[in-house]
Image 1 (cartoon, helix red, strand yellow):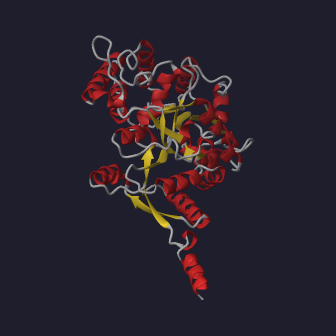
Image 2 (cartoon, helix red, strand yellow):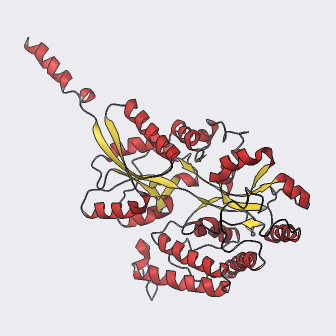
Image 3 (tube, helix red, strand yellow):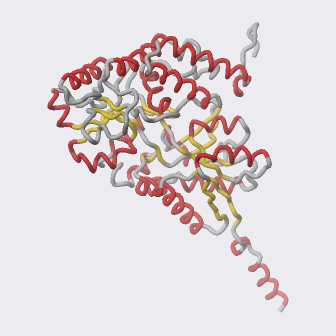
Length: 422
């Protein structure tokens, strides 16, 4: 009987029958569809294997970052945290998250578009499933009535052409403010929406070669030109400085709405085939749009990074990317994932948004300074909108940012000392 008893005991304590190891995950509260998609992905992972069990805690978005900071100070971070991709370098610099290089197979990461990755100093720290893209929405019939063409990927609007169409629309008397720029939005909208105009003009928020120099970049001749163009839209009353609502386009009071693909479902339902989603204007170096939304990273304090990495690998598989897109309507961040969806597959009704993400998307600068940089740019653009000289507003942003970078010792990037040393 002893050999039999030993065999029974071996089965009872075998890893296959052991309770799965808990992998805690924190995320911020989002819309119902995104929360449901997240729960479904976790359930599928937990059912797919016996070794790990992911558990989710949702935290109100308003206190999410503060909760992470507080938990990190007392060593209570979970294994996996959600992060808005532009903040990933700051989380990495602060020591909250570890690199995913070596944890995630290269084959799982390689197919991801720019909007599916978060990096710092050339290393991967986060991955995501979905993105949104910027587009210039209009109605085909209204453009035809003005004699204006529909912009295409092969021939986007030039800034002069776009301004001319707006001016012609205003002269008809039908559109008091022909362009809706989401004037009621605040915060990250400014950098997400308008720093791509800088990149389209051949400049940027910061020099990405060093991530230390802002002077001569954010206040370059090209950047000032973009700022002046933006300011003129309000000065010429082509866009409203302080709109009372955000329904101008859907109610026919605006000819164009420059906004994100989160409006695609609503506008498609309202306007059907009359709706066109065009690329943003080309300021000289091709249209550009912002890349990346909320993503997932693994904390430095995680005791089971292999289990956390297994879950992240699950999330970025084509099947899971497609499932998330189907439930949320968001843009898949891989061609393989897009091919498994009805809307974003080749020939799908929303394929244009995937094409924009693939061709035009530029991630926001991968520096821990980004939150401060974005805040300074927001203030500059708000000042320009209110009538301030573009060169003066951008100079002030440059001064604020270079002071911030210096105060934080370059945020982990080498600061070159006098004499050429570093």
